[in-house]
Length: 284
Image (tube, rainbow, N blue to C red):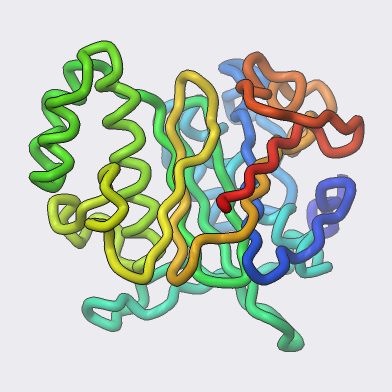
């Protein structure tokens, strides 16, 4: 494959309309596929900096997850912008706290046109890319162990801690996952990340107590993960969650996409042989 002209997902995605959000889910390769040593094929479209970053991870699984996430991001944005994935340039917006160049990531859009915003997240076993015509944050997390929930609960807002403590013991892992992904999605959309303390903002079940003029929504992500998006302003009219087709980015036999175990985690789904499993949710 010509790494400078890696194909975008088929069919080529169209820009989300105002009020719409696209979310794409990807399963990273299982351990050993592709080979996790230095013979691993060069992922299509990644920059030298991204390849160095991927190589810096000690764990083969972490290297493969990073490479898969950033390859998928480039292929998706290349499809939306009608540009070769390798030709995309990424920058950082100013930090809202100190104006330094470490705020939200953005893609340089040549030739003008309406803005296209994105957010990328990955956790063990799942990657999420969110795309919208306005600022957006996405987060995905594998549900933590009960011990991790107990250790991390103190970092939550006091109102969230109370809700978590009131949840039945068997539901606390999922409840914590929802709280944490909402919080990270919101902080990523703000552009601060965790430099803003997670205790500062309430993202619990009481919508009236959440940050004003923001919409934070849970996403379907299967039984092992929680996921959420955050956007400024009104709630999106539609949020479409799709699984990327099998074969991206390491070849047709890559063990993720619509052939991955658990790739269609319940919910109402329509299957397409070209675009994989699609779950469409309207937030109205």
